[in-house]
Amino acid sequence: MKYAALLIPLLFLALFLFALVKKVRLYDSFAAGAKSALPMIAALFPYLAAILILSELFEQSGLSARLTEALAPAFRALGIPPELSRLVLIKPFSGSGATAVLSDIVAKYGADSTIARCACVAYGSSETVFYISAVYFAGCKKNLAKPVLVALAANFIGVLVGCAICRFL
Image (cartoon, rainbow, N blue to C red; front, side, top):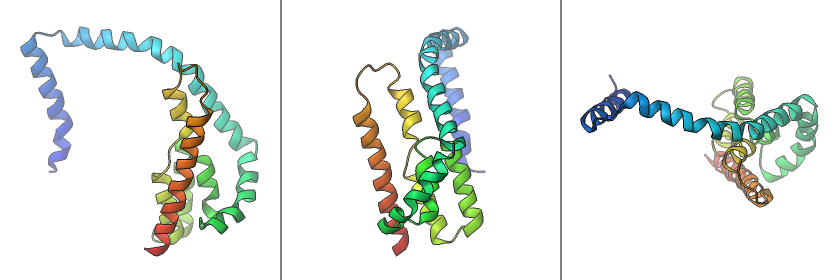
């Protein structure tokens, strides 16, 4: 048996024992914490709903497919396999959508292919920028264009470097 599998249950047991020693009413503390989270959830919901709706509209409108086709030659010139253009475009919007695209790439080209390795690196080296921005900046009143653009640039640079490394390995 792997000892790492015991880590979480042991952590919970230690937490319960610590609460018992300190005479903390654990259930009441949990309920109070959950109650204080409700206003935060209410504040986040409109931003998350907007991101989820926009990412679905991006895919369903056909804009994603058209943009994928248009950017494929540019990606090829930069050293990114054109088969990854859909993954590179969908990842900033949707993690589950990117997982589905990654799964399709691996199934189509094989797990040991250069394209699949590049896809895995591209998936792992990028983030769902718009979702994370909605969560982190929900209450922020400042202009968020710069942080989002920096995050998108970092995603793209990660894909570029990752694909370059995959070509040599």
